[in-house]
Image (cartoon, rainbow over all chains, first blue to last red; front, side):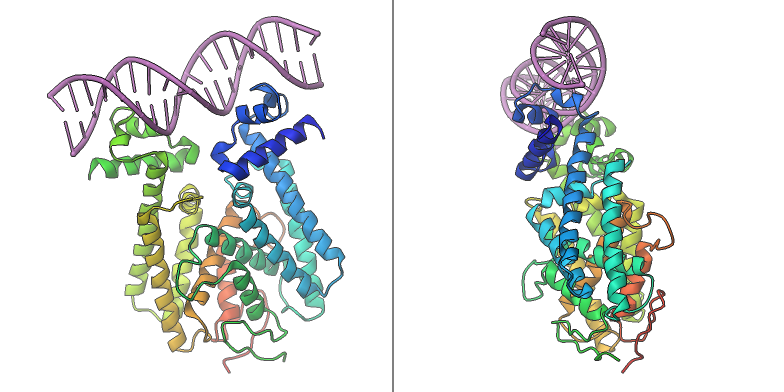
Length: 201
Length: 201
DNA sequence: ACCTGAACACCGTTCAAGT
DNA sequence: ACCTGAACACCGTTCAAGT
């Protein structure tokens, strides 16, 4: 493991422990057994280190989706698993999730590339599901955006505590993902809310 | 306007200009024409000031929705306008939007109250739309969560640049909101992606 | 090429006073 | 009740050296 990689790892650990405010270049150097400004030999600035952490995270996320894809499940089911995995990741590592979508005024190349390759994988799965008539026709990019936006938003709302406040309407992010599949898919999957959908035409 | 309020306003201005990192208690004091630690007489900590800014924003958001509600439009249309307003607000004030859903380890009372009252307004509109059979049956809280999560996620993805990358699949957050209405509503609104839905049963 | 140590400006926070 | 000024520990960043 290169020094650069271990600095990224230390940064991620600090991030998990104390949020983004806990990630200081000095602490990262310390955690790697180096001097307070050794990080500057590997990253141009603090933002640059944070971007590297985010890129690694996004890249792992894509790899997880690729593994799901390689399992050759029915595409609609694969898509659902990918979205659930995304949500679980967000809930398990909130700080990493937040960081990944922080304000990257000028997203690094590394970062945008990782995001785009995730996106295109998703689009392919949507296309495959459409070919089997499990998803309605229409621009696959747009449909992929719809799923991703919902998974993302549901996770973020849950983390903010705006979802599972109190009472019975405690929809988990996973449930919302399932609901969306119910509304969109043409396979007659009934959302658990009790609403009835037509059977496949 | 109380000193406290003007401190909040200065903080919001700094936030818009330079993101959350630009909001320093010292700069806020300076901007209000006070000493560097005058803010401590009104806020317990920096986090406390940020929470107050977020709460004000959330509260404004709710008031905008209430104005829409008061216009007595058909509920489904009112709901759509609220969601679009939410998205437009996020795109116009990204830093405020991000802040509002930052990691509020211990969300202030003020903050959670504002969020809850927004939520309950949304739920009422969903119920009204269901009563008119414009939305399918099912837990209205859950349906409201679905709309809010999508609007939120679409806005956040757009801000991260993960939506309108390049090519034709450049779905705007507003379009995604419209798409969701198309899939969910029972009024036979056709999503612009070209997918056909059944007419009302 | 990679690392250290000193230095600078800035920040959050605390404390003792002032009116 | 509200504000100021000094002080402390900490941080991002830069620079001049060291090997």
